[in-house]
Image (cartoon, rainbow, N blue to C red; front, side, top):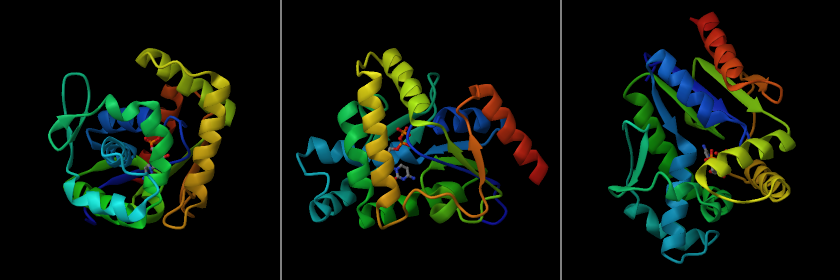
Length: 223
Ligand code: CDP
């Protein structure tokens, strides 16, 4: 794994990680791995099976049935769960709001962390999530911890949702984001936390292009 170049981008909900990580990967010709999509995929299966998202034993029992793949397409990267295209389904509000409970289950984290390391072992990678710099890829060449104010993150999520036809008020989104931040930072296994050697980037006043450019500059400075 040592000869692979790795960029780890972590941070709280809706800080813009996936948008930025995708663009950075494209610019560098690296593979992009959206680990949030993986936790969301397990959550979708849990909800479809009528399993309670915080029932660790029942969720763990479902893990052998979870086969996640990323597939490039003309419309961007698709997420497949057992061969089914679930790219849009995993962005629904019920999946979003239950993902933190599922992601707090240690067996889920162990399984997905192993899969993420296998993906990273195949080539140069940009990976985004909550625990990439701390747990999944602790030797990444560059670690970025992206933050933004809750108000700004709710505003960004609102605009994203609008494009997807999802109608939730900015006030509700602020509450949901704050609740998810709390759960993600207070769980026992691999909580959301800035790695000691990560660069903190407050993106509140920055455009997407500005964030992408600063990450590319940081990366080049490390080459
Ligand atoms: O896009 P957004 O920031 O809303 O979330 P996401 O990155 O798609 O992640 C969804 C949920 O998965 C998060 O709220 C976390 O609970 C969990 N997650 C995690 O625990 N560890 C990761 N490496 C990535 C996501």
